[in-house]
Length: 431
Image (cartoon, rainbow, N blue to C red; front, side, top):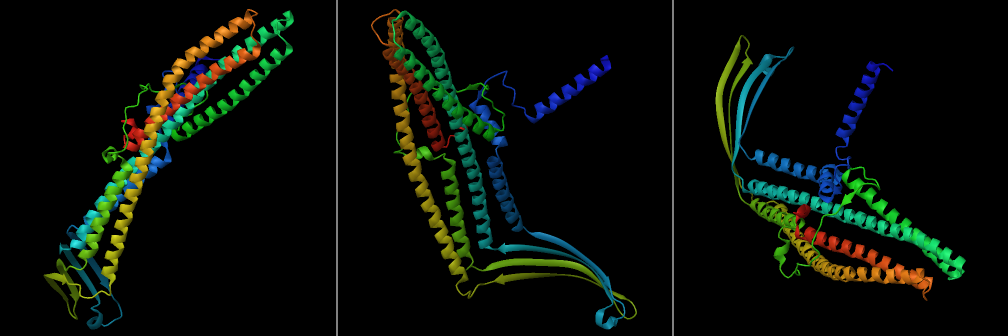
């Protein structure tokens, strides 16, 4: 192959590599393990629900701007020209040209002004709703990440146990040949090995499911070989109960309802303001040309018009509007109370789960060392031909493995409870 062709191939490969890197800027994991923060930032950019929330907030923002702009004075220019044929010009004027400038302004319209404030509160609520959805998305990513890491730790524990059981099975067969153990000891070891392999398969499937979910949320291609790094947290319980509602002051869902409540209050006032008179002013200036039997006549002039509208009788339309707005305000207040009750209950449960996880972690840290020491002692006695059966050794091994698995679950429960507290407190993205 010529150097020219080799150069073309290298160039094409480099271009393709650049395209792939541009399309998937976060698919390279050789430099550093994948972290929670990295997944969250990717999910906020990639996941459709986040984009939907941004689009919703943007639509409400522009609707508010549009309505606010309609309250400002307007200025328009209109021009026209036309001709007619076959008609009596005395009747139809035969043709006409005009140029007119019109200005309009609402001098007093409290209902419209209050409606503008209502829409501003609606926009504020939409912003908080976007924060709430992103907070929930970050919380989901964190939980999924914790499960993926935990199942990965359990996979490692079970694989190590399988390797150890394979060595133990070989040892038991050698001891069988010397008459120190029976065939039952070999069968028990094989059954324990098969059960552990089945357990490993189930945990691997769970881990793969969490990795797929994490990939779906973030848009990052994540495989079973992807290294996941869980942030290091001190295993302490430093949170109190929900006796003070001030702990939820930054919860975006609750803040959205507060803004929605203010919006409904403005709507009630706007409906009541429809009983009040309105005053507007309109002015125009223009030029008009129209044909006469022998020539064209031109006119120039201006006009202004002040319009006062005083509602007298409206068949209850305004009153019903006020009642409907007040009912909507009550609905929002009930929603606030329901959400606050749910936040209190969930927060108290999360604090209890956090405290329980800390207690279990402290116990398991001590028990793991004891179970390892107990298993090493039993295995040494069995290997040395002491008076101990393989069944006792397998029980001690199972106890050690179970303690390690329980420790992994306790740490996962701690992280999940910690992240749930952050979520309920409205600490978006854990900040």
